[in-house]
Image (spheres, rainbow, N blue to C red):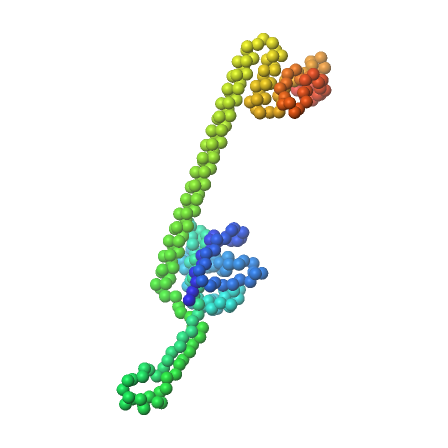
Length: 275
C-alpha cells in the first residue's frame, strides 16, 4: 500500500498559503512542529536546488541521515520508501509531488507441494512444510516507476503552469478593462464639465448684471460638482484685502447661508494680495 501527495506552492519562508492534495496515509507531524507538511522543510529544496536532480528515490527513509529530523513523523505509519519529484516553472521549484510506499511482510512456505502419488507420502513425513516469515520489508524503486513519476510530474507542472498563466492573463485583462472603464469615466466627466462650462458661459452672456452672473455661476457649478455649497467671495481692497464677504451663493437648504457675513481673513492680504 502507498499514498500520494502534492504540495503547491513551495515557499522558502513558508508564509505563502499552501494547497495540499493527498490520497492515502501520509506522515504525521506534531502539532507543535514548525511546519505541518514535511515538504516545507529545507531538506528537499537543498537536494534539488542545483537543478541536476530530477527525482529523489529513497528506498528506506530511516537510512538517510538528512531526514533524521523528519523521521519521527513517519514512525506512527508503515511508510518506509519515498519517491519525490519537484514541480518547476522556468527552473524555479514551486511545489512537490511525493509518493510514499509502506513496508510489507512476506511469508514463504518451504518443502514444496504435496504430490498426489501416494507412494511418496511416507518419504515426505520428514519434510513437513514450514513457514519463513519476514517483517518490515522494503522494495527498491525500479526504473519504470521512477520514469513514470517523472513523466507525471512533468505533465503536472505543465498543467499548473498553464493554469497560472491563464490566471495571469485573466487578471491582466480584468485590469485592462478596469483601466478602460476608468478612462471612459474620466472622459465622460471631462465632457460633462466642458458642457457645464459652456452652459454657464452662455447663461452669463445673457445678462449684464454682475450679481446675476455670480448667482448663475454659483448655481451651475454647485450642481455640476454635486457640492453642498458654492459661493463667490469678494475681498475689500480698502481693508488691504483682510476683510471681505460673499456676494453670491448657492447652498443646500440644510446649511446656513454665508451671504452678507463680513469675514476677517488676513492670510490673503498678507501673502497673496501683492502677487
